Image 1: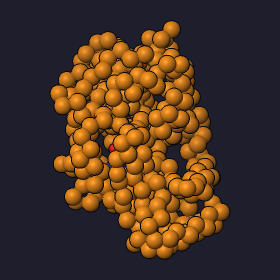
Image 2: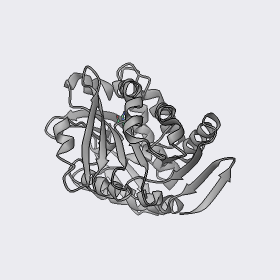
Image 3: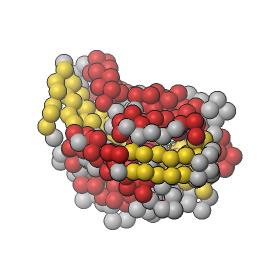
Length: 330
Ligand code: AVJ
């Protein structure tokens, strides 16, 4: 990693994929929109400044239980997690506004000398790093602009490391294909004894799941459609946002929420720099997100071969959400 920018006690670096971000995005969008029968867009492209702000708004919706549930669990277990991990370095993947890591850093206190935030959104990352550095004097704060499915090796070798991955964002990875590969790559950045604390949304009552992704105020719908605006802004695409509507449903067999945008009428999108010319008929859909839901059993089933084992399963009284504490084995 090069291109370090130093500002007070904050060092910001850009991972390789974020240096050629537009070329990578063009390739990924082209690949996704060429997929049949169901074209897709990678979910990480939700999070431009507007999309990140919309997600922040989602986290405060009455129907969207994951954020406040996870915060409640973290509040209850932070001291215990700090005691059993004693990390010299805490890394947060997909840090967003970086709110939750504060609770953990307050608990790990003097044991932790460095904190690394990893996020695709440079604006949010920079702000979070500055605020952390201000509020935790003596802590070295590093930011990495990057994609945690490509760029984990930016972290360098492990040792005394705790990686945290909140919000249930691991749910965006395909449970059978992407999750095992992600875990193997992550485990490579951990030394034996290092820990990984990951938030997973749990399989539950379908009405509750449905409501969380179809909120009455329509914020999730705006968040979903915003991904088309991001592709327009960055790649010069000509998606007509008025031609699409929000769709989110729970696929019980695969245990995931799927979000799509559906054409309300025939429409076409051209993206010359990505070599895309896509005609959609009324009712045609583009998948924008999967958000997989787990049980303790289905998560543990992804671990063999990863070098990680489940040490603690920390959940709320209603079992809506869980924090899994995983440990790198020797
Ligand atoms: C940030 C990926 C955890 O899957 O629930 C919220 C994103 N999508 N509403 C999730 C999201 C629709 C969220 N994650």
